[in-house]
Image (cartoon, rainbow, N blue to C red; front, side, top):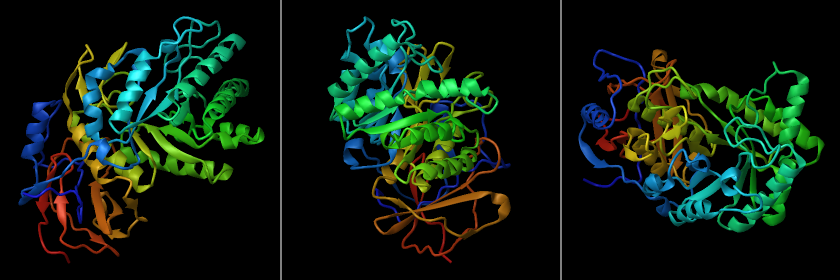
Amino acid sequence: MRDCACLSLLVWTLLTGLSPDSFTFAGAHGPESWRIIRAAGPQLPLVGRLRTRHAREIQSSPWSVGCETLDRDYTVYDNYRAHIGPLGAKRARIQAGWAKCEKVKGRYDWAWLDHVIADLNAQGVRPWVCICYGNEIYPGGGTSRLGGKLPTSDEALAAWQRWVEAMVRRYKGRVCEWEVWNEPAWGYSARMKKALRQARLSQYLRYLLTAETIRAVDPEAKLFAVAASHPRSLFIPDFLEAMKGRKKLHLIDAITYHAYTGRPEDHYPGVDQLERTVARYSDRIAIRQGESGCPSVRHEVHALRGRPWTEIKQAKWYLRRMLGDASRGIPSSVFTIVDIRYPNVLLSMGLLRANDRKEVLYRKPAYYAVQHVMSILDGTVRPMPPVEFHAAPDLALQVVVFRKAGKPLVFVWQAPPGIPSDDLAWRPVELKLETIAFDDPVLVELVGPRVCAWPGPMA
């Protein structure tokens, strides 16, 4: 067998519809998931397996992985650190945790953050840091949890500024991307009273103070704003308008947004709207997908709750989200590396299965699916404009094309309504692509990861 690191053609149908020949199941995990995946592979000659790459082997890429909630000790970094570099992400999102760093007024404990930042850099993964949350040791200091209050009192804001300045100075050269707060606009909508919207916006406009502090210490720092809970958030245009009025748009390098939809493709109309909104204010400000994931078991709380998720569905979901982002040239982060032990749920959005003691049990199929995409679609790959294709309409096909080393990479999947299914059946699809030429194509299954001989002649 030969290693296949540079491929002439990639086609995997990520099927979501059910059929009589499907390998269907409910709630399979771990070894059972892999038994089903191996049994469902294409009955084609095997010519190799996809070679993966450690982050240190990849010069650049658009991919990030989430290492969030360390600030609240909902995960344990050393329990999963060995799985980060091999994944292939070139960035990792972490949360700085003011309340964890400053438990006594004026005294900072950097040990935990030093360890995480140093280890990520040593693995070839650049941390980008979300500066959050509040700190209750200060009156009016906000709260140290998701959806909590921002700092509001003069004493707390001054302490916040001191902490930010000390942190940026300490990690200058090791961290160059800073995101100010996480989802500050929870509940912000047209249904809110105007006065409440203005109050929420004015609180976050203290972003100016934080951004100016960061730039004063590190003029080369990249600044990310908003971390909106969805790309259609009204908070984004309101914030940009306010920044424009203050002539401070230069303090924003990117708007970050989060995306949680059962069908991965459903959020892209909102992304298109976001791109148009940002373009009205600047041709320099980028957009970045900063947090997006799905569970591997059913949950009754948190995002995408109340649905029959499985590890197979999760692997498909991540593949489709990543390919959709990459085809649009959007830097993208996978939420998250490991299951998170929140107070009210063991959130199963991780690529690694964890238990209630925050120990890693195994790599889920989604880990390998994400790893394989990250190994293929690095910074040398360019998305091509949408390609014209012809197929039966009832197939609901999605087709995206990239170019790598002068050769086309084609990804194909089905995307009917609803969340991905557990269907792993392979079946022939007649697909005609315009203006795409192939030479010695192969077919790749992105979870396995089997590289198979092309099943027949090219028309």
